[in-house]
Length: 79
Image (tube, rainbow, N blue to C red; front, side, top):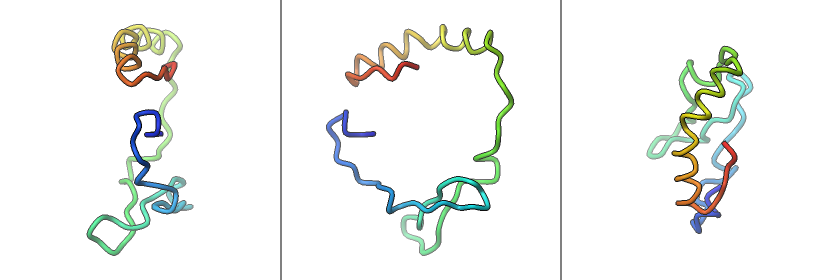
């Protein structure tokens, strides 16, 4: 994920575990703490569907910003 920026990967899979109760990965342990850390109860929830019209509006609005970002990082994410 960070390699395309020429950065060394610091955080790897070993830093996470799958929390079956929440249904998504959590940090093995917080920085400077001895216990695992998961996102809050509002994270990992399902989201309401977005209409194609809304999707198109958002895609068109963010297109110039995304292209500027793609040029900066030298990678097209096709957002």
